[in-house]
Length: 229
Length: 334
Image 1 (cartoon, one colour):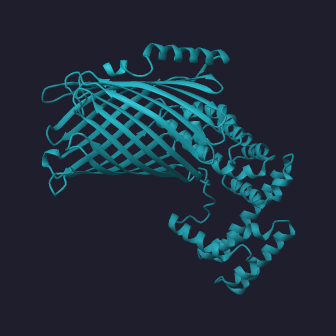
Image 2 (image 1 turned 90 degrees about the vertical axis):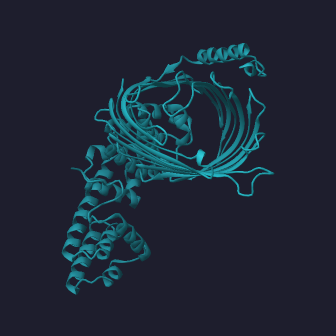
Image 3 (image 1 turned 45 degrees about the horizontal axis):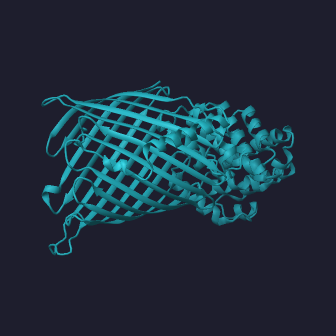
């Protein structure tokens, strides 16, 4: 069974409210934190800290920026995960990042997306979440000319797939969205259109086709409600 | 019905204009219809009311909706629905409800025009206790889409009761604004002014209300909305003038295409006043909750369950009521 990754990685599953508290906690640490200062606040032994710091140094040498791995370390410390498990998670994360880099570079024009750290991390997140490589490649290819659409488009894609929309149709819908003038932060509204259509007994694939047809004529998704039902 | 003949736009000319418009738009580009939605359902239901006790009934219902694009900037839609209820115990009765409506949408740049018209009614009366009636309604709306959505509309209906002398004509003007700063939150504000007249008696009412709403998405699969409304009815019937305050909340959740859950709650407080009336003002508080869920294995067959309950508390005991409805059924989408 594939992991649910629309809301981010769930490598350390915990109840939602604890996650929210951690989000606040991790956010309060600030992005400027370094590996050393993060480890300094951890309960780990000196040898464990040295081992983790060495791992980060090794990764820097292979071109994986510390800032992409640091959130996992902070999350593990906040959840009081033992050092050996945190290290295992970091290694798996680094592996996904290397794989994501390869994938991004394989797509023509993928370099700007690789330069955008958030897009790189998101690609790794999709890989570790079990999304097939060919689908991730298709998403990258769709968004490569508008890097800002990539993350919202992938979150929507995962949500559409989880909801049960045919994946080919989901990709076509996302292609139409990326080409439209709908702001990327509004993409998730597509899910609402589909759910409303379902309540009106319109099949999701048929509704997706209608949405695609009208996207070029509107600036906001809400307006589609009048044309597709 | 005479009032319809006195309307400023003669009906025959109105039809000619609409037909001309449709033909004109259809000529711009061939009409492209969406696949129609045709749904048939059968349900079993239990209704508990204060005066009738338990009633067991079966319901057969049908729905047809269809939209066609007349041109790139115009579409026409029609909706028809029908429901027939038959009680099974304590003497069996038929009840029915039918509706039909059409809407025409036109857009040009940031401007939208909406013409909406329909009719609904019941030949035998409805299971909820509504007497046989016929109710044509109409709406003309204009919208401007910008950072704010501005909407103004004129709408009305004529309520015709063949068996009583309570026919009424209602007309209202609405002005509203909607703002959605993000996909997670949207706000709306509507101001309404209306006039209702009972055509077979001498009663005229004026209505004014203000409605504020908010809603949005929580995550990808939850949708919520809250609406608050306050208003005033000024009636020639001294006992019907009232202030009213209402609130409604709705939440919908569909985590997978096979499942949908919806729930809604409402509250309505009415305070009746008379200029020379009793010092203690008659009041009424209505409250209700409604839940609906369905499951489908294949987008064709739907298993539907509904539960609703409402109650009215009033200073006049004769004005109090309550009811509970539960319904389970199967729907088939052709």
